[in-house]
Image (cartoon, rainbow, N blue to C red; front, side, top):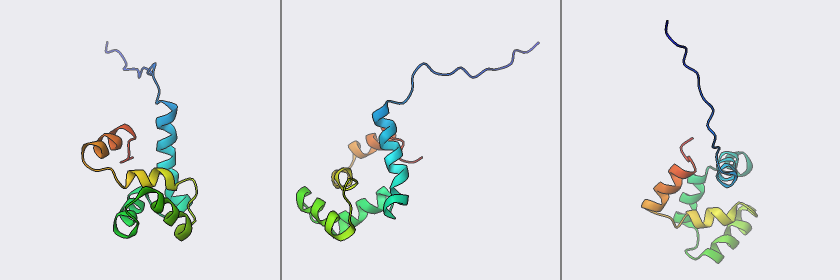
Length: 93
């Protein structure tokens, strides 16, 4: 007789910091009207190059307060680091 497959729950869960970032990325469109990718593209095409002026620009032009800090940093990431973040934070989900 064939044995029924059971799904065993992992002993490990997503780190709370990673879960927080995943939730932040998921909630961003509802809170700001844009996805993370759209914010990054906007910053790259229209925003200031330096971090501090970029944060000020996001605050003055779009009213972003808390969301502007990680968005400004992500706009500078390219290549391998961005791929690592995509995998680590499951950005495609």
